[in-house]
Length: 266
Image (tube, rainbow, N blue to C red; front, side, top):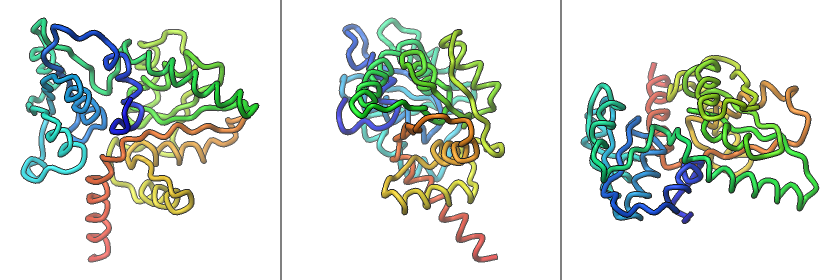
């Protein structure tokens, strides 16, 4: 799918990358101003030579004046930004023309399934090659990745909510696959999406130091803490699905460093 794509959003966009989009002139989506999906869709639109309209509920003036992270790179890919309190409704209005393609927030839709059929085959090929049986774990926003991966792999798939609670996550997963067998684990405490919690930054730094692997700073720390708090739920070797999206770390690290500095000044 190209080295510029990173994270599960590349999997979610596989269908659209391969689809016949003749007659389509623009892509419309919506979500947060530092969304990994926003950046990935901007890259997809650039590759396909399509306009990209993106709707946010609000836009921080500092970010607007000094773009960084996913927002900066999405703008460089040609993204046109719109601001509306009801971002989903505005996006649907912008996509009402026949030459427009609407992609839901987080690419939460049936078309995302294709990429996880491919991923499931890759995982099972890896397992067969090394005679392994895996328990698969990945943190979730809308649960799209977990839902479709679980549908197409023989292994047990576990996840945890990073946006909303377990009830919300379950409803999103079941809307995609009513027979889903995804097992939802609760984080050790409630984390609001994108909140700056020192234990999240600390586990991120610890894993980076120990493994040399840079993880996403929003989803993965919650996922890792949930994983460690629920080790008794796993019966096989754990295969952790890296969430990618590390361009978003640029802005998140700045936020953490600013908060740490403020704490030290007290």
